[in-house]
Length: 197
Image 1 (cartoon, rainbow, N blue to C red):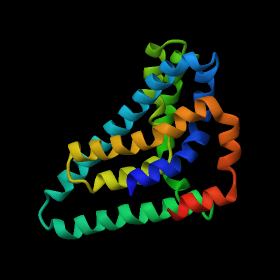
Image 2 (image 1 turned 120 degrees about the vertical axis):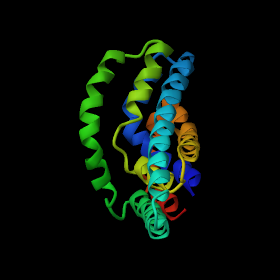
Image 3 (image 1 turned 90 degrees about the horizontal axis):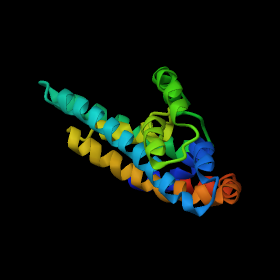
């Protein structure tokens, strides 16, 4: 479910990261190495966040009387996935509150991105992706809710790695077809199908 959500929901990622991805595209197809470095950093941040929440979930499951807690985490993760479907369809902004929660962390991280903009080399694009991976995003937070139920840091990291890889094709494609893809993403039928799936 998380991989499917990331593949279909990555159209949302184009909106969130489109400016950075577009900037990396200036200069033409030879900039593929910049895109790969940026996305590797971004996906590594997702895996790190997955490891952190997976470890936290694992610790909470180690407590006595864990069945009610495990069930609560499982229900929360699945409710987040359902909310994600509605969010992608444009029916509700129910996940917007999660993005507001992440704003405090992003306010501290975002100024650091200025050191690497404009990214002209992979050595600048990679740390930019590492930092940009912490941008508050309801799609990422939905996947993190599932990683929380994974029960370990390793499983949480792998789950978020799979999620990040699912977002990769659209973000790489967006680097070269940003204008067309943006028009496609805005189509109500595309949003409806993505949300339903």
